[in-house]
Length: 312
Image (tube, rainbow, N blue to C red; front, top):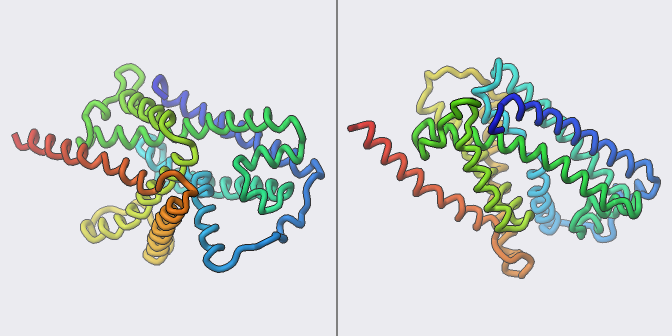
């Protein structure tokens, strides 16, 4: 990413095809093993009902949202996309559809070899599922699968999130040096180094599950506020050009905002409940809010600093 935009984009394409190939091999290995049962799709020893079912669905959403996240990343790079009005919607639709197909098939494979109770209790369901299907070779297979999938995920997120910090530097709402391109490579080099260091700090300081929970919670705050921002901008700037159209607006947009609010409130409730019942060491969602709030002083500092310099 630091040396070349083209190289990072080629790497993303290659890693995506490798990831799909690994997943296809995983699906084939599990379904062709004959060590499962299709009865697992329709039977459960003690199915949940009512509030317990709703709570379980919301808790499961965090993992699902983490797997699906990345659908929005292309919008962060819109300035570097050819024919964005055409290619960005196409990319979003194709990406989401592929994710749905892959995610559903993978989970059906897990459920084929494991009863739903074992899926729920598993710490690493992929490893447990492959162990049932293929035996002792499962450890090496899961390790290779995680490495291949992680490469593509890291690269895609670095490409996208770095552009946001880069744009903040350019717009003078963050340190100006983050908005500078590398003189030779024409990449957002400073922002890339900042993200690399900050990401390593997070990895060293917390568990994957905790980081994933915080990440999903905070990103859905951003998604919900982004939808609210559509109404605000259309009110403040009614005559502005609208190069993109939202299908079903305003109904679809309001439904999205309502769902985001429901998910966020329920997540906080579940986190507090699990913390009070000693099922998790901290309240992940509130910790994520606290860490995110640390950015507010920086925002107001740079906003005040650059507004003063522009007046002078």
